[in-house]
Length: 599
Image 1 (tube, one colour):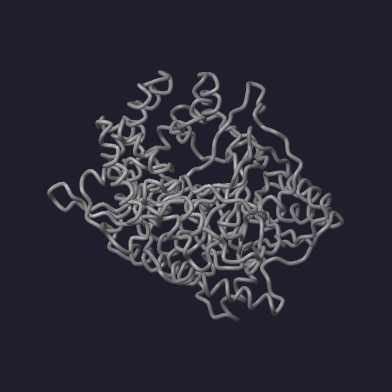
Image 2 (cartoon, rainbow, N blue to C red; image 1 turned 45 degrees about the vertical axis):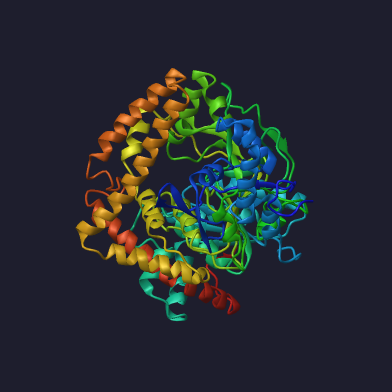
């Protein structure tokens, strides 16, 4: 092996797309290295070479390809090799071997197993029964003994009694069964306030829906987090079952990725079946345990993890002392669980080819939102999409709360996960069956409305991401810093708060418009049926950007701006108290006080 950074070096190198570049004049630029601890002034040629090395290759391979791309004479090859060698020696081209060394696990210890499975539910006893019967039977067949916790947000006492009856009828299926409805959550909230001295308003917002919102899934998820504080747990929605499928050609080495959505999509035929789905007889708990709680570098099962799609930020996050897969998620087969079909119009790669190969498939998917969505190989991301149909949660170390009310509570959760140093997302190459009660087909007009009629959970997610401060401390410090930023923003004069919100929403709408404009050029406006929809939606976006009220959430009634400020302030205060709330829940557990009670 040749010395590092020479043309004889056989190692494979790449640059990163998130290099910080600062123009210096005269064509030179100041470029920050991978760890951003030092910077160098580079010539225009060196900058061009860096930008031309986004994937791994040996230095001679990079030089030969760049020689062709720059239309340089063959005699220029030694110059390119010299420049590339200098960039490698300076650490601006980073070798895969160096990245593998950075990712090497610090410990050989395996994390503990999942001990709790939680099911949030509301007003669906039949779904709850199907869900529990399926998951309990799957666990029984594999000898898994875990606690099963149902957190019930049903408003009707008769429905809550029906849900408790479901649990009583399943007591002999294995594992301990627990239940928490509004009454049980209220008792636990009182204990947090009286015995732990926590702010009553923050506790109530986390668990009890004092705003009387119609959707409280996040409050149920928060109760599960507090019930299992200190444990490894799995949350499954009440409309899932234990039936698992794999995407076609699943397998291969685990990967690091900084793509926000590393998943791929496959689509059903006219009969509603997904021909690409491969049935798998596996243990959902064990599937999550393959990633959950593990250091990212240990997710390859002893093999090196492919770093091709990871950014420099991924490896900076990897340096945190508690770096681990904090949240794991399998994919979904059946109802996608997506609130809008707009996302389908932005698909790329194989997913786009499969969707747009036939207009009938495209129309059917946009209307029904039925898919197989999963990664082909285990993938660890430093940020990403979160669909909470099934989530493994390593709550041995502090995790953020979910937005307690309204939809998109999982989107807010994953945005707040960025405030927890070293917390990574793990995507599993299997999909869980999701079959909620049927919903009406989506109409083309629905997509136009979704583009410019934002709901409160989506607006809060955008606001959180725009405000999230950097942190050098632990998760508690990061969440409190996020809480302060959010509470201070919500306390601004109404006009200033509205301007902050509009800016975050307009940024999102602008990004969507740029993406579609780029795709129209990239694909030459084809196929025509897709391009027609995209152009129509681009016109809707342009009109929406001119509407000063487009950021007012449509799910908060006539005084939406004031309602959003209340939710933002309440979420900020919850984040300030959440670390103490979790610690208090652990202390109360030692005294025998938990949110859910045995059935």
